[in-house]
Amino acid sequence: MYLSGEHRIKSTPAKVRRQFENPETLKRTVPHAVSAYTNSSGKTIITVNSLRSEGEVVQYVYFVEPGETVNDFTIYWKPLDEKALFAEVAIHCTLRPDGDSTVVSFNANLEFLTEDHYLKEDKKNAVMLGITELLEEVADNMDKEQRPMTDQKSDLEEAVSKAEDAVTELEQEAEEAAVKGVWGGPQMWGWIALAVVIVVLLIFFR
Image (cartoon, rainbow, N blue to C red; front, top):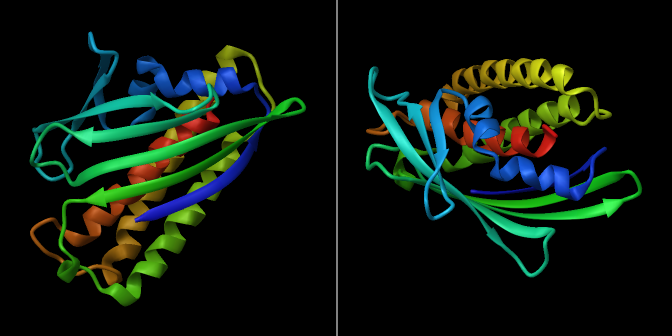
């Protein structure tokens, strides 16, 4: 699945980019995260509670690959467990300074552990629209003037809570947009939205 967008943030490119590589921010931002740490190779290992099997956890590796310039890079999000719901997420980001703001452009390519016959092709556009609306809602909440750090923490927690609620709503709406298979169709679409939420929160929390 392909997603793209562009948003303006009142912050510098350096501050925006740092949030993509901060394991503490990742741990607080990724819904259902248990832990996040950077290994010796510079990649972040994130452990999350499984949504498919209660009491189990799934690990993902998250890392940023530099592009041609310091403001051009690609984020990768890959599972380390076969029981993960999505196979890979790749997000190419470009940061462009513009006055006292940074314009963030991104193109995301998401690959999921499913087969086409589990999905109703004619409903994919409807689900895509729901994800886009969710992205815009989170962006509106986070695209504000920079405030003291104490306020930022509470704002992030509030945004994460709202994002998780929105994902739950999208899962319910996706009942008519997916056919239940071994991967639990509607829940899979919830994870698609979850992946987008992770990206957006990392972009807009500065």
